[in-house]
Length: 238
Image (cartoon, rainbow, N blue to C red; front, side):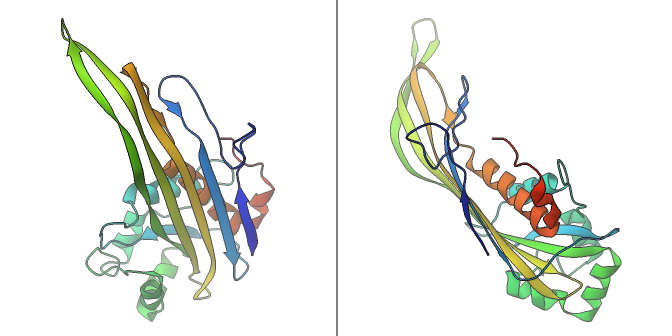
């Protein structure tokens, strides 16, 4: 088990945050934490691929489809890119077991479905070695302040005030080894930050990209977990 890693800001007074500041539309500080629990060794061979899934019976608080897409695209690109079979291709290849009306609701259901001989053989035939099941969400909380906008004579718009809110991303990924029929590890990525919009005539949004940071961190974790040699690569900037 690896201990949590917290990305630290280099500015005094922001010991647990990544601070990225630009001009208009600036990026606010984001605090991140990642964790990993390994239950078995991993390695991906020639002709093998990974598929990244999440719950399809959507309710409030369920993992967003675009987050899963973000992780899939990131794992399949950049340094240490790994082969990905898209979720759509996987669902079509295993019809009807992963269609929204019949898809697993959680990791336990996923394991039950995959262990059926017919499904297991089909997944093996399409070359999928690891299934990564993602759960989690990004939420916006603790909004405070207000903005008031009006029009001056001549129709010139102006806004005044200050609005802020907290955002938090919390995602966990379970990695299932199809060949061995077992969970080989669990990964988690958390990110939190405060966004704000000050306005004196013009609003200037300063946004904390918490979901983007959680996606980047979880993607890097998946790469180095599946292919441990990738841990020797330098960490991405930002």
